[in-house]
Structure formats: structure tokens, C-alpha cells
Length: 274
Ligand code: MG
Ligand code: MG
Image (cartoon, rainbow, N blue to C red; front, side, top):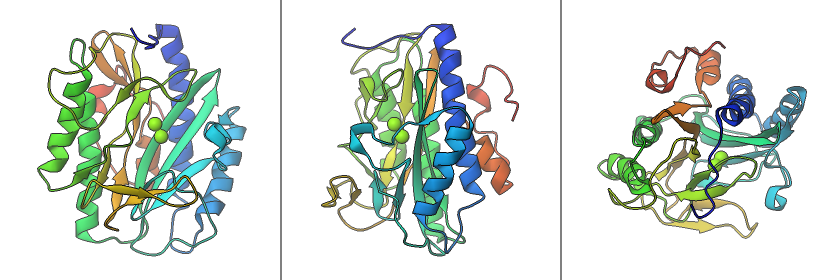
């Protein structure tokens, strides 16, 4: 199966623990994100919070990345490096977080509003997150990678948004980026078939304008070519009994922000106890 590592039920339960370390970290950060706060101060909080849960920051040192979080404001798509610049009212900030526990990685992401943001940007966040669930819905036994990519691409392009091509979702396990690659674009019926025991990081990266991107000289930061905003939402999902099951959750974020949402209900085997 060209390197795809299927996980046992026991391994999937361990991966749920790793995913939940990240979910709780993002939930903790949700209460701290406000105008005037720097991304570097949030990074320090996340580092200590992950350690306190008996886990290791998953990104720190991975491919020599210098920090715990990838922090990508506004036109930055992904892989932004935390710095001491304060966040401003009206910004958006995509936070991608990894954790390593019991030998398995968790890896997910959420794009937060800083204070009040424009209606146009709210819509970008909403559509990008909805497209993540469209992708998850397509992660079914006997569907193929192209079905998942098509679902996300179609959902976003009909709004006129750009779907980033160069960066993709991936298999997840004892290695952060396992096979297969999971593009957010594709053709129905194409690519590898999904199998029970697959665990994927599904992660649409969606631009308000062009899909084209560029990279800063720091060798990390990816930003939109036209300077328009970009959003990134990521979940960790296992294929169990032919159906997608969420290992990660945004419920800790929603609890912190007093948001009520049923979006995750179809993808849970049992109710989540926070
Ligand atoms: Mg990630
Ligand atoms: Mg990922």
C-alpha cells in the first residue's frame, strides 16, 4: 500500500489522546487571543501547557521549526513563525499545533478572529471550516482520495475562493507526515481507496482570492500571492467501521468562546466529555 500505515483500534485510542492534547491547547489559547497579545507569548503558553499534559510539542524542532505553534496571521497561509508583534483588532490568526504523546502525533489547526472582523472575512472562516467537514464526510470506506479533495475544492471554489495546491493534508501516526498525501483538490473516483484503520490530518487551506502562494525568505512562512486573507482548519480523523471518526475536537475552543455547534456530532462514535 505504498507506505500507508493502518492503525489498530488500540493505536487509534492512543492517537485520540494525542489529538486531545492539541484540542485542549487550542481551547486554552482561544481565551488568550485578543488585540495586543503577541504570537510569541501565545507560543510560550502553548509550550508549557503541552508539557503539563505529559506530552511534547510536536512541531518544535521538526524539520528544524523553531517554535511550538505555527502562527499565520491574515495573508499568511501556514507555517508562520511566532514573533513579538501584537495582534490587532480585525486580524485573523491561523494556529496550527502538534503534540507527541505515547509515540503518536496529534496535529490540528483553527483560524481565530481577533476581536471583531469584517463580514467578508467571517465568511471565509465559515466556508473553510464547513469545507473541512465536507472533506471528512467523503472519508468513507471505498471512497478515494480524489473524492475527498473534490468535496473540499468544489465547496470552496463555488464561493470564488482559491484552494492552495502546494500544501496538502496527510496520514498521521508515529510520524507527523505519513502517506498518503491528502490534497484539498481532486477528481472524483481518482487516487487511493480509503481503508479502515487509516488516520488522516484533513486540512483545507483556503484563500479569499487567488490560490497562488509565495514563501518568505525565512524559509517557512507561506502567504497568499495577492495579499488577501487565508484560513486553515484541520482535524484528525480515523476510518472506523467504514465511517469517519473524529479524534480531535473544536469543542474546547467553543467552550472558551461560548459558541454552541453541532458540527462534530455526525462524526462521533460517542458523546464527547469535556
Ligand atoms: Mg497541522
Ligand atoms: Mg497537518
